[in-house]
Amino acid sequence: MKYEIKCGFCGENFESTRTSAKYCSDNCRVKYHQLKKKQEENTSQQLTIQQEERSIQYGYLEQQIISLIQKNRFIIAKAKRGEREKQHYIKMIREIGINIKYTELQIQEDENKQKRIQKNLSSKHKKVLELKKKANEKSEIINRLTIMLDLKKTEKEVVAIENEIEKLYKNISSQKREHIHITAELEEWKDRLGDIKKHLNRYRETYQNNHQEIEAIKKRMNNPDLTQNIIPIPQPVIPKRIPTPSKTSGKSIGAGDLQHINFQTFRLSGELGAFLGELDRNKTCFALTGDSGAGKSWFSFEMARLFIAEMGFSVKYFSLEEGVGKLTQEKVVAYGLGNELNLVGIGSLEDVRTAAKEYPMVIVDSFNSLNTKAEEFEKLRTDFPNTIFLLIFQKTTAGTIRGGSAIKYNSSATINVIIREGQRIAIMEKGRYGTIGWEYSITQKRLIKTGDTF
Image (cartoon, rainbow, N blue to C red; front, side, top):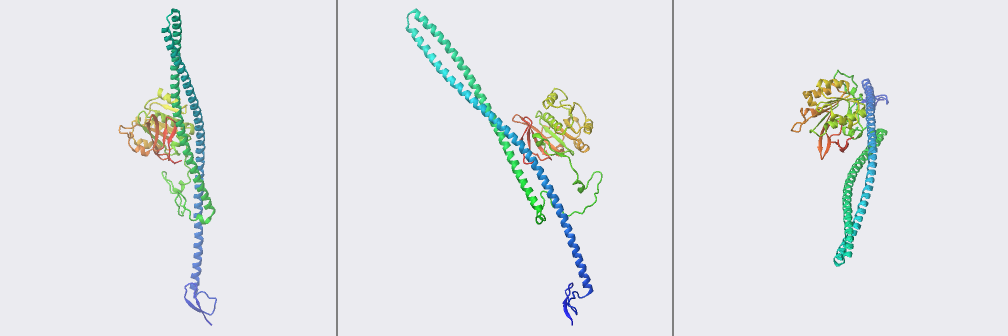
């Protein structure tokens, strides 16, 4: 007896005496097993790819968490510093408020005293008039002499009282001027307190957002179903990559090798450190420009002091415009600089290049005094990538950097120093460290304008 059966591979009907037959021919049976083996291999390969992709995603998620935690630590430090400044301002406001209250009481007391003396003066004037009237009425010589003696005595008292009133008027005027000065100072401190409160609120908000993002990432990592659809932010999704050996030369590097290099980035403390941003030790050069007399040299000495104190640098300073004299001495004394700063009043481009080999930081005031081409500016950064340069450039009558606009775009950061409302202010016009548009008061030694970049 034969049974009609459908082939398990080609789907054609065939007849067989066995009910357990599955394939119409040996060829179909072999092809079915080959196909099944291939499908199993593909499934295993897909699982391996998925595991690798998930491992890459986990790595990026862990990097995000580390980055956010580091940001939060920085935010916490900034918030603590802001809280300390807030308490300082509150204390100052309280003390100023006490001074204002004391001054108001002093003014009130002096005004009351002045009223009493004025009343006494009116009484004395009245007595003088009465005595004069009485003197006119008396005809006897003895009485007239007595009255005249009393009159002179009273007139002297009037003059003394008038002098005392004049002193009180001057005292009241002085107290009122002091009151106006203290009130203005109070308003200034209140404005600073308001700025600090705004910074604190922004730090708290950013900290909370980062904290929520960390929790969301942890939740995704603990749920395998969710991690499959994760697109790391801000990093793009990296497709499956087949490792290849690095093909490098003396001036190139593979992208894979680049990921394992630890670059020397750092932040300096204080408000000037925040103004400069997160710095990279590689080919760092600050171009400092500004109008004549705006305070470029003073600001360069303040930056030198910051790098010496924070980084332990020794700094070579080429004071080519004003030389090394009384003005230089004033700056050194003002910033408390020691022998970590080495000064020279003359020098050439070759001297600057020699110093770049020996010192981690070189300052030139000004680069235009070297009488060299602007191209040498870029060569310094390229030839000495581990040396930090601070080069001062003069401005033309048109208000542009003397030496060409290429200096502004080739520098790591371009800082313009101006005078505004009697203050010397440094403005971050161009930079690679996240603080473009920030303003730092050289006069007050504090930030007066910031952005949201940390």
